[in-house]
Length: 335
Image (tube, rainbow, N blue to C red; front, top):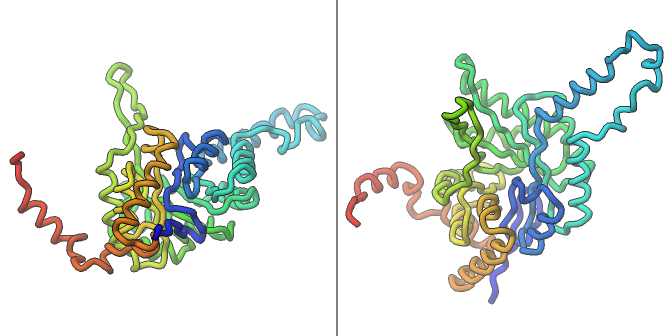
């Protein structure tokens, strides 16, 4: 019997757990259609950034106040109406609308921000444009030595609460791993309105250009080893908080996806593997996953999901100190 590979994530029914996460692969309708044809269960559009929205708002304010005290014409019809300006945010909304028209799989919009400001109202516009769910990408790097851990956590919670008030569609929150008590933070995020967690955000590190002596961005695609950290924490959190989980970073092949599902991921997001190998890599992975499930007598993805989480594992210590001690005592330099 062929195993059922459907899954649910963030309240959405997916044909399979493989998702294209926010990346250049989801920037155009052509690549989105190619991903759908290859078999992805859902797509996440690139983020609409807080800075983009706030910058446009300030520019509009500057334009509208330009020469208003010098020309009578400025009082009526001197400047175009707000809606007549083409903006990046409007282009994003148009991309979302077109994606929903062209695709039959769920389309998830993404907002990236760190403060509780007026920009969060765009969440409502994304919902109105047809987004099946919203991913809130919180890319927050604390730099204030007087800000406590509690202060940082509260910023996350305030932001989630503010966005939750704007929308009724499912809300996923993409977070990093740097919390003193990740289980407690996960619980608080759920109480603030999150339906799912995406684990983990890759906080890209700046580099130094020795020729120009400038701080420069250098994007490096995730290695397979990046899978281990989110896999461990999803295995710990599965069953302890009523949230769905998506794993991201380090998923490169079918074995990575299967491991993620075994520890409790509901969805498996990919970017680096798709950028390296193209959309066709999805079909290859799905075939290998289906074969493994059938060979191991699984009836469905749901049956295997979380079967090796800390709550289901016969050796829960493997997720915490026992595994740490075993690795240190058994490591050998011998070939």
